Image (cartoon, rainbow, N blue to C red; front, side):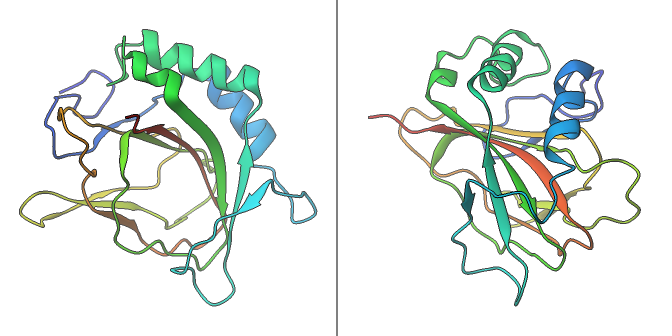
Length: 187
């Protein structure tokens, strides 16, 4: 068990979660810049997802290069990170997602070498929904609540490319903001 609240064991078929994952300087920057995103702000992209609710969408915003470097350095150097000293971080991409109320992401898996989700919805929101659910190899359901600054990590330890465990979200009751990082598979 990690002193930060979640398991950091290297079980290959599970996600690892850590409460209070990002240090204050990083989380405060993300919250001040991205969780106050208004409807007038133009996203850099919309998530082309067929699983969205009738009117709910996911807006995607790219981070600045400096923000990416700061977070990548943290992930590379921190013992809170399953990616500590992992050179594959050079192949990662970062975005912030704003999932509007009523959104639900259906059960799926990602074909990546690693992933990170950090809940950045301000902790003043009661019952935000949008909890992260993942399934182990026996299809048992595990729920990680949408709590501010909880980081959910998965790292592919297999030598051959393999998709990460199946996961989904519950319906969010309010805007759900997350930092997303994916380490892309390289050939």
